[in-house]
Amino acid sequence: MRGVSWREGCPVPLEALVRVEVSHHRPDESVGVGVIVVSREAEAVVVGAFERLYVVGFPIARMEPIEGFGGDDDASMEANNTSGFNCRDRFGGGSFSRHAYGDAVDINPLWNPLVKERTGAQDGVKVAPEGGRPWRDRTRSEAGMLHPGSEAVRAFTSQGWGWGGSWRSSKDWQHFSANGE
Image 1: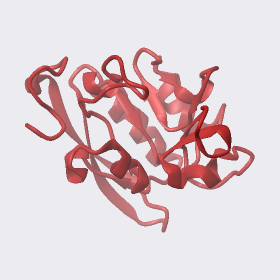
Image 2: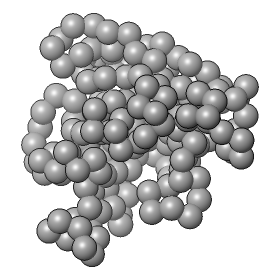
Image 3: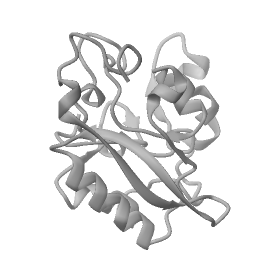
């Protein structure tokens, strides 16, 4: 992690982070074990939420620490990788993302993209990852997609975490965090 997803100046020390292994269903219905890095403070919530996702059979396409993508959030999202900690700025810059604190998780980001109206973007809409453009249509109901009121969303929100799918100015369908940012 050092020098890839974590560096000097990050808002949490390395010692405050943990690598958590969680069982999950894959899209092909097999069972896998994924690794996600979060803060020690977020560990219980994240483990509990992923246990609930496992029980309801919610598929996770891929789950590995962001350093497997050289710390590149865009590459991780395009690979539909569920991830947690990454010491990076917020979308749009200006301050650290909640991921830099280890209390945020992105789930199946290709199928649950960030969607924001933006001047200069293709058809006036920024979609991240760009490959997630077909899934910006939330009337689709496919395994691995997150929807309001779904058991998968409640796995996190019932524990007090916020969901980017409920934001007003943009929709970050993949994103859950401890303080809702």
